[in-house]
Length: 274
Length: 291
Image 1: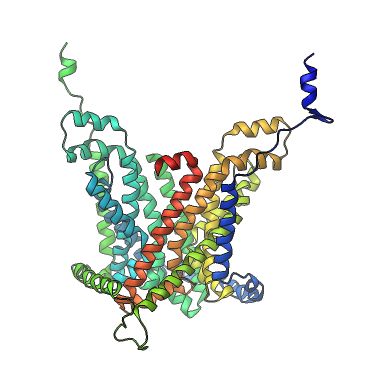
Image 2: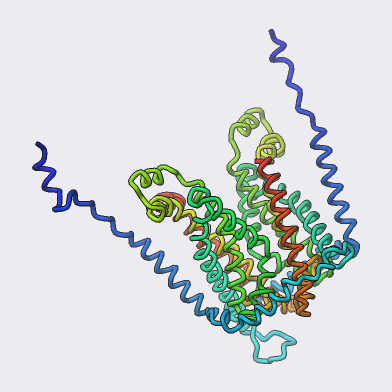
């Protein structure tokens, strides 16, 4: 029997379990750090849930109005709501198209696969600065030049260039090296390499990024209107300031349905592309 | 036979792409034409005007913080006060984005287990998934004006809760997708050992899931910092409200200082969060190599 060796490791109720490894100091530090940041942040914004109880009746009163939307706004195709919605859609379409076209060029300048080292570093840093400003800030600056849909289109275009160029440049970084080597061996110029190998290889992912920013643009153009940059956001601010909750509810319903419809459509398209 | 090597294969037809491209251009032109009040003729004014504003903004940023700006009601006001005020409000934006992300993370994490196909039956899954999708379809600003401002008033709690509720939808969707793509091996092993539903989740699902999920939370925090600027327009806290007022008042020097603070803090938080995400997903060794 080998029992002698085994028995020594057995406790009175069978085999002894190996001890659990203690949690690593890094994990403890990380969790404590997160708790500390949460504490400071909660203190900074006066975190408190008591208004939920105190103001509950106000909320219920407003929701009571919201559940009776002004259906005439939705059923009448000549209403302000539909005009604003079409304007929002047009802004998103134009901004997505122009922004994506510029972004493809910028992406080629922003990847070490397609651009010389100096240029790609500069492009990357400029893009990081452009992306760090919220779309709202661009809209506010452009609205100072002229109001209406034009500043909205320009703000979203800048925003789209930032996102699509970043994602596409990352796809270019990860592109299959085979076709590139073949072209280099055949003596292709930078432009020929881009045209014949890089663009065809990244086209499916590029197309899916474009659809992704189109979804974002529909949401964002809702918001841009709030600073006077055209579209349905202007109606939201108008009805909010007038406390016209039934009309606001009609706007919410229309945005809700439009966003879900475009999500489903672009998901179906993206599944086919990738 | 030399013919096989001499002839090139025919290139695939190009006309479907041409037709699709022309159709797309047609849609864009129609969209441009439908915007009656777009005033396209004002487009050439933009480069000059933006250049002029940018020059004033840079002036404001480069001015010595102890100097007094012209044309302000308070004669003691200095550029330094503008810097401190912008930093304080940006701090509030970051704080409300963090609290919003915490709310989104804490609520979405348990719900995601009720929405994934390998941890919940279909009659539980469907309502939870519909809930996630519905939340994601409502922009934060609408949540803020309809629900949060009446509840919390014009203060940062309203913004934090609007961001938090919206984050439940997007974080829930990401988390449930990563639950569905876990390795089924450990789950089978604990099931074979007679684990209950809760033990299965605790010992086989959560350990596999946690690194990716925490990385999503950090990513969402980055997104939420940008979103918090928007909520300022409806006065739901953070730097957005003042930015809105200052830029609308064409106080470009002041606005320039605020924008520099926003850019600086956003990039700083992005860098810290990206480093943390890399460490969480790829471990200490990969991080040491990358650094």
